Amino acid sequence: MNIHDIKKEFPIFDDKIQNNDLVYLDSANSSQKPRIVVDRIYDFYTKEFSNVGRSVHYLAVAATNLYEQTRVSVQKYINAKDKDEIVFTKGATEAINLVANTFGQKYLSEGDEVLLTELEHHSNYVPWHFLRKAKNIKIEFAEINDDGEVTLEAIEKKITNKTKIISVSHLSNVTGAILPIKDIVQLAHSKNIPVLIDGCQGAPHLKLDMQDIDCDFYAISGHKMYGPTGIGVLYAKKKWLEDLPPYQGGGGMINEVKKEGITYGELPNKYEAGTMATAQVIAFNESIKFMEKIGIQNIEKHEKELLDYGLEKLRKNNSVNIIGNPKEKGGVISFTIEGVHPHDIATILDEDGVAIRAGHHCCQILHDKLNLPATARASFGVYNTKDDIDKLDEAINKCKKIFNL
Amino acid sequence: MDLKDLYQEIILDHGKNPRNLGKFDNYNKDAKGNNPLCGDNVHVYLRLNENKKVEDIAFEGHGCAISMASASIMTDMVRGKEEKEVKEIVTDFLGMIKEKDSLETNILKDDEKTKLMSLSGVKQYPMRVKCATLSWHTLTSALDNLDQIVKTEE
Image 1 (cartoon, rainbow over the protein chains, first blue to last red):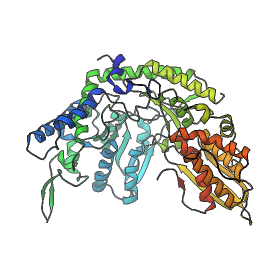
Image 2: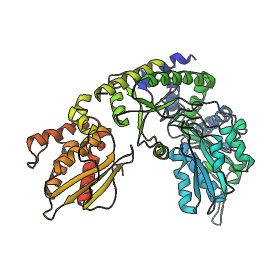
Image 3: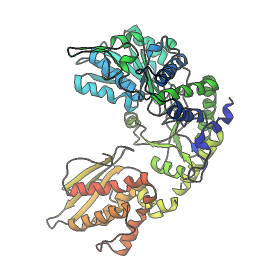
Image 4: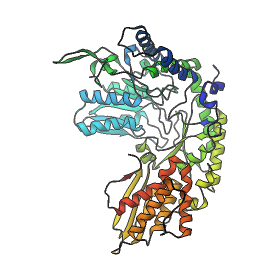
């Protein structure tokens, strides 16, 4: 599959949006969906639908097999040791909540510390804040440097003998910084501290190898990986999934239910209570296959080219200020324009079909640190081209013109 | 949709150089408002005298051109008005932004109405309506002595 004409695999680009060709630069928020993913959902509902893991009729067995095939695909894609280490969730948010809740229940008590970073998305802060309220634990934040990175040293500085878990982003959704997660895991493990990686921005853009990274937990968002909404993955080492208590109670996650007591099911059922997002899980398999077909190395290379081109272009554009300058950076460019608020930028760009995001991108701690109430953000996916970046640049110029800059 | 309707000269002017920006000392009513979706916030301060007239009014905050211009124009417009009149203007303005084609109140002069109508461009941009209305909701909250922070999201 040639990455340069991949746009045609995505039906959203077939038609004009508000009379414009769509220039979609909001993939860090959510990616567009290839036809095969959309078709898979339709086909499943129209030809193959049944609930999974319960009934013995033909459709139920077939659906269960399809559902489990995605688990194996994900396992292989991220090189997990065992398919039982793959837990489906409704998203990365739920994956992080699952860990915070169950790990917190079993291992955190008053005065214990959880170490995050200043660039975390709210979904990797709020779940821990719940524990701060409920259990009086402390939350520490490793600092970002002037380039918008979090270094290994910054992490090390905040580790104390009270640190019970470290939870960090793989790739910042604002500065684009790629964190040295392998080194962080190594350092943490040398002190017997487990590590959760928020992989929302990592999984769609970087090669993943769980056995190599050696993290304890890794949270994945399906809809950012060209997959459906309502599906995420928690990768967790088997020892943790066996050790931690279940998260939600309900059908499917039990072994035996009696008036006197309940025993819980085996992995991975233990963490998948109730009817799961079946069609989405099955269609997510197509997203994985889609990414495999392109090849993650090609995706990385393509997005790096776009990033370099975008940075060069926007740096030349007067009054555009790019946020952060990390050495290792993913396909995210956050910026401000002197004298124009990011929401005005986004509205004006939208008029030309250029879809970006403006705001704090669910990272208020980071924006407070940068002393910026909001930023504008262009983020890339496989379907973007240099032409998209030219259009972004032109639209920024229009914006400057409206504001008499 | 036309960007010129949204970003009229008067909006750009008030957005860039907001009038009545900054706190003053002897205010006797105030309220905060914020838009959690985009992080915009506003703090309205005002002084009502014994005759329930707005003697002075100002605001602090940050936000887009629309929200700054709206707060700027609003504070200009309600200074010197009685509380009852202010509330009528607020209701009329919010009604116009929501559904009505024009302003109906007799309290405002025609040129004042023209000024306010410059904000009507947001009607074509549903995501931006909150930018225009935040300071107005916050003004109501200040007048009613409501303690809770005004939010654009529930």
